[in-house]
Length: 626
Image 1 (cartoon, rainbow, N blue to C red):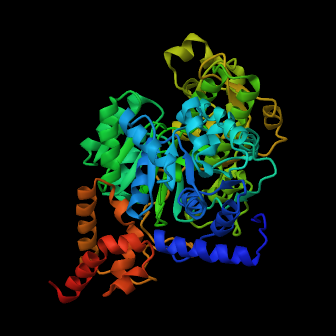
Image 2 (cartoon, rainbow, N blue to C red):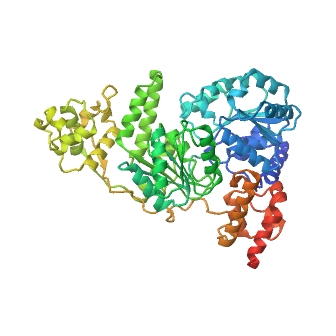
Image 3 (cartoon, helix red, strand yellow):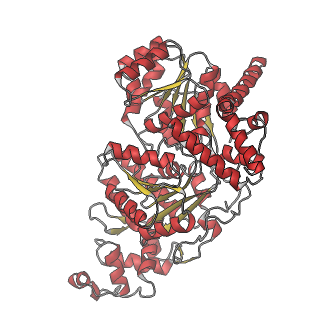
């Protein structure tokens, strides 16, 4: 993808050298990734922009670095208390003067932060959106030296986005009150409609848009037919991700509790998270997930935004998300460290029916409902496709995958069989039509397979010509056929009769034999048996930072144990002390001097000062076997 060009002048060259120097000395990184350098230079020079970059792609550096390079304090608007806390902790570890202003602070603590801001004693200040738009906060910012405004999770400003937050609407005041201060809006997911609303509401007309690739090649996408979802999930975790950290998403609070309990009984360290839990319980469960290894959190969609944990090895959905944007955002919480990870979802016809009903019964405008239904249909298309899922996913965001197949999704690794489904479709559509288009999946299947139930007899459907015409398929196969016909647009749930399936206009062509219908043949169980098998893709991110060399297991264990102890003593997550990639890099390179250690990505000046001697001692001890 192309990025807006920035002219390179002699001054720009000097600025670029300074930016690279700060990147290395503060964050311990040897080079920029992708468009980071262009974005940093653009904002440092006072420009506004919109940045779309996938989770784990390095969005934070795009505003943290310019804030350090410009005069004044960078103001970061974020709705996420957990993200504020973790990012500030990480910045402190790197020697950056950072603070937060949110509801967790007492009046005295907030006053102390405000005093530091006015005194020029802060490089970065994270502020909740509802606080920023208050007259008191705007007055405070008007008296301070401001380097830039960064609006994180910018999709929250859009009513068309998957996570609209009303408090973000007021952020238009930033452009009005501070027109000469650069603004950078950042998000991991936004379609064209959402991008345009971000631009309009945040005053970014004419500003360049930096759109990075949405591809996350280390994530393996898999969508399975929902049969017994709790049992399927337990099998997925125990067979492929035993002992790994993961997130399981459910639609309801009750289901969150049930699944967390079932996983715990199965020997999985699982914790619930939803808005109905006491705040202290939510905070404790979230802290355990962030700070401990191998914890699985079972949550509603209220969980996850702003969670900076890099070693989440899987994200599982037991219910269909609202849109491809939501699916991408949630699955993107897996594998932020670039190591192989899984995005697994169990999906069924009931998911489509439930979501359509929720949309049609909502109080939103007709335009909102049309957009929401369109987003749902796009997600159902992703779930039902027999082609490469990654190609379909990236295509939604306007990106074309270079290869026809990604080699790291279920459809590429185990291609589904496809057959001519016209006769099956005609039988199903005829059954729905002749029973009055007033019945749901289970009743239609009863009629098709000739099952003499009380309801079938009550309505006289055993006397219909379609009774028993579908005995060649079992219940599971008929459910799959129904789901695919809904995805293809030949059937749709009736908004007035809960669960009922109605024919659409396109069904006429199917019944007449004029429309081709290709259906996927269902196979028993999951089609991918081992997630730990070597991927067919050659461009997966490396598992360690050691230039391909495997780290000594003993040294790795010692480094991780040291990191855990250090994290507990400092009251921060382990990855704030050192990321897994840095630990792996040390184990692979086995540096014996501070100069050699400084060359490991993730070791900046402050971390070298704080931890260098201890890390070198651990490496030397492993060499001597002590």
